[in-house]
Image (spheres, rainbow, N blue to C red):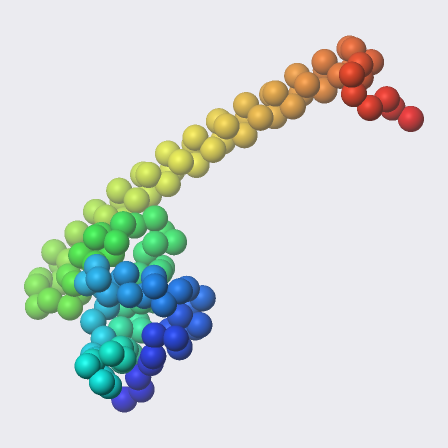
Length: 135
């Protein structure tokens, strides 16, 4: 079975070793320990997959506790239908959040466009006083 060091995973996923240790502290990863005093972390393909899913969940805007809950849910012997319904609930909540953020961004962009146009009109009316003269 292939194993990975913390440096290899950090390099592969372009994150810091500190971030990987943080995910371990949060219960998302569980490497074995080797070497003198268990100093060296050894990550399995399972840990690598969990790290990949953690980073994907973060890109989707999920919290670490939501990510952990989803991953743990799929590793438990619970009813698959209940697991899928729970995951659908998490996704629906995240979709709602992202759609609200998109609406907020669209409003902010419209306000910026309006302010830009107002500034251009003021520059046109003032003959660009106080600014650079047109050549």
